[in-house]
Image 1 (cartoon, rainbow, N blue to C red):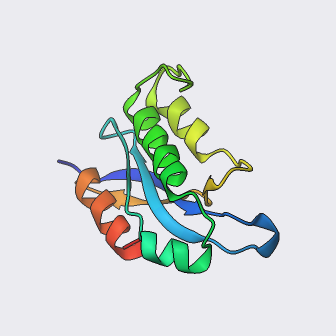
Image 2: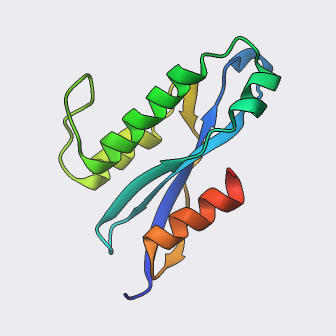
Length: 126
């Protein structure tokens, strides 16, 4: 594989926006040159419950599964029907007022977007 640019967003769990607290729970990575868009997540349920005892962790998990599905282009069940990974990444990275929110878009260079996604997940989430 050749070295290509990529963009990524970190997915955050933000149960109480008024407190401006969040926990990183996932990463979405897009590399147009590699024709790659994937999302991955890792929930530390114990940490989330310690910070927010009333948090519906199952709902957070379900919301993250939807993001993964949208990244893969899966539709139906309320998921948007968007052509192209650029439009899907745009939908995923758009600001929103939900418990699972994207952070700012960042970029980099990689030869292997799947390995980079795992590295970012290890570094920023796990």
